[in-house]
Length: 188
Image (tube, rainbow, N blue to C red):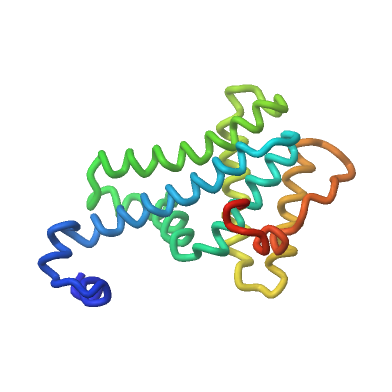
């Protein structure tokens, strides 16, 4: 906390007034990261076009978030994984844990709405389908981010998921992550 206070050019006592502990500060970062991701996903879900184009936009928004906000991505998807959550349960209140889980659910609900439009899965399977896709996207980022061909890998992953969801043998050109990153952030 003293290092954070120094970096923010605050007295440590002032920082503790707003964040009584390291964990409180960390939770705020998690909330902020989820809010950015949710805004990006929601913005894409409101675009006009086919369900496939909307789904492609959501996937691109996820990868773009991971690329543009790597620190937020890492804390969201590392800290809250099943392997790590038990260590955090003791240090976070139930309210904080529920808030974080709710934000993740809100992000996933945006994707579920797109899948509902194509009647991809029965409603009782929808959560599992979204969780599987969410996990695949996260795995691509964690395992392959930093590679020179990361943008192409993201494009291939997106196309494979779209192929699985929409079942078409030939996918239309939807634009690469590189092209998405070259447009203004208002379009992402």
